[in-house]
Structure formats: C-alpha cells, structure tokens
Amino acid sequence: MTPETRYARSGDVSIAYQVVGEGERDIVLVPGFVSHVELSWTVPKMAAYYTHLATFGRLILFDKRGTGMSDRVSGTPSLETRMDDLRAVMDAAGSEQAAVLGVSEGGPMSTLFAATYPERVWALVLISSFASQRWSPDYPWGETDEARRREEEETGRDWGTPGFSIELAKHLAPSEDDATWQPLAALVRQAASPGAAAALDRMNNEIDVRPILPAVHTPTLVLNRDGDSDFIRGGSGYLAAHIPGARHVEVPGVDHAPFAGNTRPLLMEIESFLDATWADREWESPVPERQLATVLFTDIVGSTAKAVELGDAGWRRLVEAHHSLVRRLLTRFRGTEHDTAGDGFFATFDGPARAISCARAISDSVHALDLEIRAGVHTGECEQIDGKVGGIAVNIGARVAALAGPGEVVVSSTVKDLVAGSGITFLEREPVELKGIPGEWRIFAVDDVPVRS
Image (cartoon, rainbow, N blue to C red; front, side):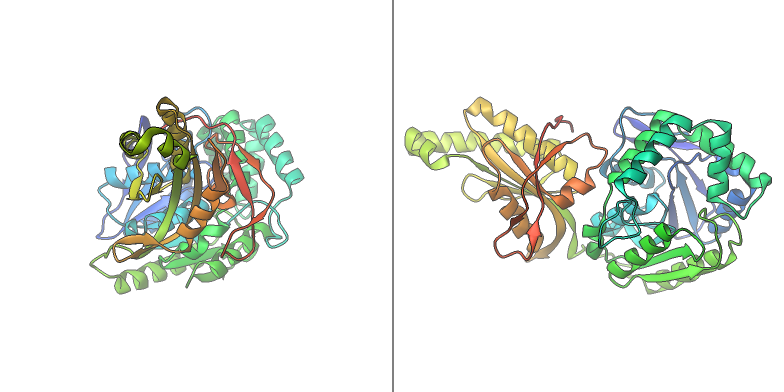
C-alpha cells in the first residue's frame, strides 16, 4: 500500500514527502538524481528496500524540488536551496533530528547539511556517493569536462524516451531483470522533464564539496558496492578519507541502486551503524562548538576621506544610516551580525548564495547614501570562542574581502563551488597568496548577481 503523500512548504514551493513506519528515531532518505515518492512503490525491489529501512526507525522520503511529486520550478535549485527543502520536510514531519541517508547525487547535499546544521543530524550515511564529479589531479576518479558535456547533451536529447529510460534502469540495476527495469524506467521517465534532467546534470557537474568535508563531525558511514564504477568507488573512498572519523565499507555487488541486487549486506551495515550511533548518542544536544558557516565582510570604500569631508557629526549620521541599512538586509537574507568594527560589518550565513546576494544588495543600496562598499565571502568551519565566532575561516574571509575593489564582491573558490545552480556567475582572478594562510588561493569576483531573498 502506497503511503500518504504530504507536502511541506519551502518558501513558495511545495515539497512532496512521505512518512513510513514508526519509532523513536527518525531517518531521512535524500534521493539520488531523480525520484518519485509514489511511483517508488511500484518498483517491487525499491518498495521492499524502503519497507526494510522503515524497521530501523521512522523513515521520511521526499522528492527534491523540480522532480517527482514536488513542484516544478524554473532554473536549477542549488545545494543551499535543497538544504532549505530538507529542513522544511523535517519540520513538517515533526523531526527535530534525524539520521540522513544520502544516496548517490544526494550525498553532497547531505554532507553539506550535516556540516551546516549538525544539531539536526545524529548520523550520516553516504551510499554510492561522491564529493565531486570533476576530474582533477588530486581527484582522478572524476569525469573530464568533455565527458561531462557529452553526458549533458545526451540527457537533454534522449531523456524520457523509452529506450533511454530502459538503458538507464539497466545501468542503475544491472543484476535485475524486467520486473525491476520496466517500472524503474517508468519512474525515472516521469520523475523529471528532459529540460529539468539536463539542468540537474549541469548543476551536479559543478558541485564540489571537498573543501567542507573536514567540517563534518557527525558520525558517518560511507557505503558502496565493490563492483560499482571507479567513479563511485574512488569518490566513496575520498569521502571516507576526508570526513573525520568516517567508516568506509564496501559490500559485494555490481548495482549502483541500493535497492537492487542482494541488499542484505548493505542493510545490515546501515542497521548496525545506526544502532551503535544511537546508543552512543548524547541525549542533550549541546550547541555545536564548530560548524560550517559562510562569513561576509564589508567595509566602506574611502571612509577616511568621507569622514573628513562631512565632519564628525555628519559622518556619525551617515554611519548610522549605513548600519541601519545593512542590518535590514542582514535580516532579509538571514544573516547574523557579529561585529561592526569601524565602518565595516562581519556577519555569518547558513548558505553562501544568501551571503553573496546580501552583499550585492548592500552594495546596490548604499548608492542612495552616496557610498560604495567592498565585500568578501568565504565558507569554512567556524568556532564558537567565548560566545564569539572565530577560526581560520574568519581570517580567510577578511583576507578575501581586502582583495575587493569598490562595489565588488569577491569570493573564495569554496564559495564558487557550493553555489552551483544559484544563477550566480563569476570572473576568475589570478591565484593569490593570503597573508598568514598557506598555499595559493583561487579567487573569483561576482559578475552578475540577481538579488533575491
């Protein structure tokens, strides 16, 4: 029997979700590329897999925006937007804290969610997943730009055709037969339009969560089958090697889809990990001392000359007007103010796209005060030190901001990699050294940013 489909409101978008089973612990399944919460139950092996997962706790399933039963949207949702959707689903389901199971393409967002909202995640399981899709010398399992472009073109051209859908089903579950392939092909065909699937491909090809992996402090299990692709096996190994304390287990099999083939070894690993983590869990969840955040630094360009021109009283009134304006925009974009040293602001955000949009809104708005600002944005692990936010990520953010010219918003490469799908575009600068920070840093200036809340 198909569970009831409910809807959570995330901004102005409705996200379809289902709750299966009961129990004192919650488990949220973050799906892979596309999903369909109702058609999932027409695939016998998938239905059996979900039913088994629901014996471990209260299982929450959902479709990402733009796919399945959730609202179709224009453009491509970023990881940040997807995190908002996941929080909306958890809130609607009455889940304060859950084990998050990220499958394949759902893994990067699940990883980012655990680092950003550690108080909402008591365990993290990454199944057949990866940190990036892009090849680089230190990530040789990724795909080249040429290979990724070919895949995007093929998806946009062939998605939804019966032949493509069957081939995709066979690729996901090669050990299965028509009893699985036919309903699975129908599911993927109806889960997204060709345009939406191609847009998802483009966004996924830009995602890179490698820089934030050390900021994940949630107990983590990384799983994959030993006969899966080199891309998945290498990507899973990378995740486990760079998430502190993560455990990596390869189980027998060739199927990429977790529900296909012999699911017993995989389910046993998940159950054992969840049981052990739940038993060791701290019942009183303290405010985390360290978590991922995006830092924003702004300051007024030419402030000394302006103060001399206006005199003390005039300058004080202008600074008060500037501060009032900035604080209104921080509220609009969900930023938290931490310091206003001199004529600048230091604030943090739970997402880099919001920080960039806030910086651009400030830059545009201060023109009415005959001012210009410069701004810098960086995402990294921050510490709570005596009630204040600190750590190397804050220092990097300040150094990045110092590189901005009048009216510019400059970001680190970490920020650029995390906002794929947001519509924000960048101009790459020459690599630089940041004072007191090891290595060369890739820096980008925000090109054309639509200001949106």
